[in-house]
Length: 344
Ligand code: HEM
Image 1 (spheres, protein in one colour):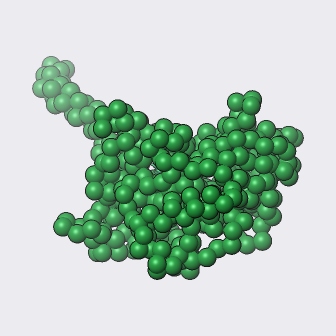
Image 2: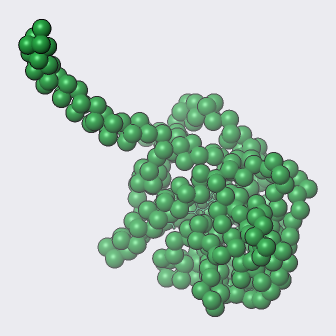
């Protein structure tokens, strides 16, 4: 009996070993094959694909834009919720970028449904605050997986310029979280310029005051210039945004107010598709003054990675899963375009 068992063992040993090797391989391969969380490389590859391929030297999203510079005049009102030195009363210099979403740096401005503002505030103590804000207060999806699926559904139809309507509809059917984004866009026609657009942090962040108390916030840059919708005449000029902003700057600086909105208990801080109810307390923390604009090819914003997780002491990220995905994708896009700069 003993002998027959050991014979059996010997007989099965190769099978057992093979099974072990297969299980090990599967454990190593399956997560990368079936993992639902896309990598930054996958996301940026898809961004390139939906934009007709890579545009060397340019950002893989929000590719069309211009550099801006100016300063932020903090009035000190936000020190009650954050001990960030940049929010103490005083003035700090900044550089930034105004842009429109999309991966094609030559897209006509009428196609840039979402306008954007990115900023880097820096004080003398080396504290920096990077922001990348959009003109729509919600994002279409609330996870990196959702974004990846949206990008795949946006792939231009073979021979066409827009997405396959059936694929896009199928995506929307399985991603109802996109509705607030669509509803907002339908109710808010694009503004006539950068100067009268509001820009939103979209994701929630965490501010910590001098006593160590935590406050969940979202912020927005609200223009002093009243909103006006884009006209049909403007939409025929492919570059009306940069031209209009440069024309305004010839007369006077353009200003926005930093409004910080405080969450109340129960407000969701991990889902960028959900707005907080109206009536939340807001603090006007100061004035953003933009007095200069430069080409994005030569200006100071060119090589900057406006990573939204580059935050000063006193401001931190929320647990919104989009934030980490943004940090990784911006870094990957930055790596590609900076490497390409010397080659074209
Ligand atoms: C997971 C979600 C997101 C991903 C993967 C993503 C990805 C990217 C990438 C790859 C870039 C180009 C970065 C560079 O090369 O410097 C970019 C730019 C930008 N994104 Fe996002 N984004 C996401 C969500 C958002 C959200 C929620 C906002 C708005 C609040 C936003 C605002 C911006 C802005 C303003 C820029 C332009 C930055 C600049 O001017 O350099 N993004 N995004």
